[in-house]
Length: 357
Image 1 (cartoon, rainbow, N blue to C red):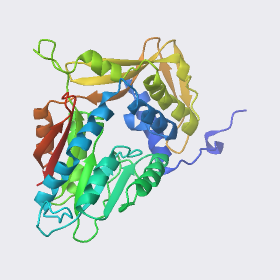
Image 2: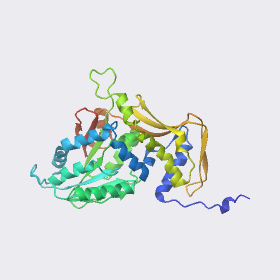
Image 3: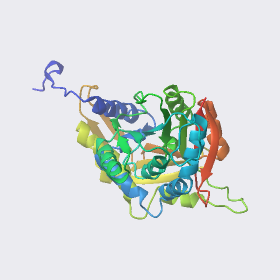
Image 4: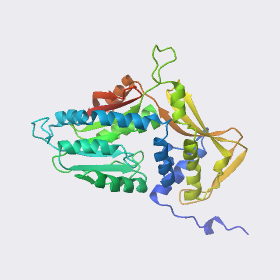
């Protein structure tokens, strides 16, 4: 005899896993089906993403790193000019507040070390607060940075900045420079992106700053000298080695591991496409056969089954691409004043400094 509902043992979930269960229920019972991209970044997904950033097709990380290498000093000079922070190298004689760094979605902070080294030339000690949903990535960031960049103190915080309130530690008489780099802002719809930046702005004070990294939109085919084509963009999200495909399918493996679901990831194919109308790359998981997957009951709700027709997809990620004008408009709409935008030599990527107003 089957147990009655009153005798079913429904497992309690941690706060983070409860959010995973709630998102799975919401996305997989919607039409069309979808899963939020923050689900990518469990321990396995974070490792796969670090591999992606080193792939030859994935130009985004290299382009942003080149910008930081070439312009880090200028970035902090501009930030300090607004805040009046003292610089140990004598670039300004103003007496004011030192800068502390906060980074949303920091991961292992592999590029952030470039900026932190530059800031320690302006001030001898730096407080760095990486915020990420992956404890493993944050542990790696802390170990690497405190060893590699003398003068940096790392105070990591495990949090989902999309769903949780961002709490910022502000030592007395300190200004904040918030980093939101890697074009992570592109994972969200225009409304969601504006809301993320507006929530961040609500935690900042006038005179604080934001450094925003955004991938630039490809040039139209009719452009006289196109510097980025749609094919270049697509290759960055569908690499020849299949690492991005593994990263995409890992979202289903995570539901299996954490929720006891019974997805068969090998029966889903990775698909990336360029949506010119919305200026975004889309990633999908395409069901290769008719199939079903069940997520057992837990403290988030009763069991449910997701049915898939052959060829049906789960939309797992958008990656919006921006024009410089769109970046400035997004910043202004969230109450930031754009100050200066830096690009790599090929104009593939942009990093914009803005001040809280």
